[in-house]
Length: 121
Image (cartoon, rainbow, N blue to C red; front, side, top):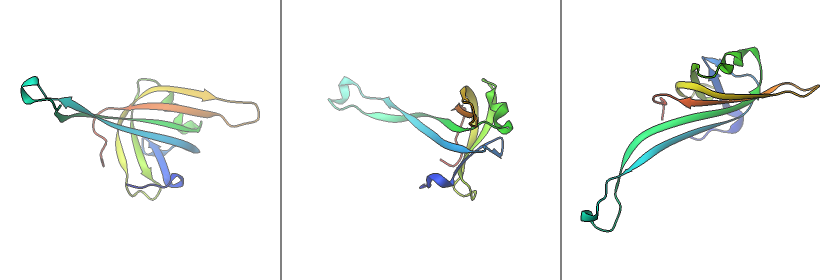
């Protein structure tokens, strides 16, 4: 999947996070070692469990107010604005930071840990 940065959108509970500045999706998987000395000198592996997380930087609006509740389970959608090539899943709010300076709009950084499958991957 190739997505241009200007087309990316993160939705929280089906509502677009306004003023998204950047977002990062991390998907990982374990490699479980199955080798033993009896099998020779080369290590062997099998696929293990998968995981995912999202970090989103955006302007703070009323829409993202609910995301400020650390420990809350939310539905995240990550994909293109035209609704094609969409990934979605349940995630837990693991942290947030809000920065505000005089004369500027408030900006926030929210961290989400995926819980369960990321559909579309």
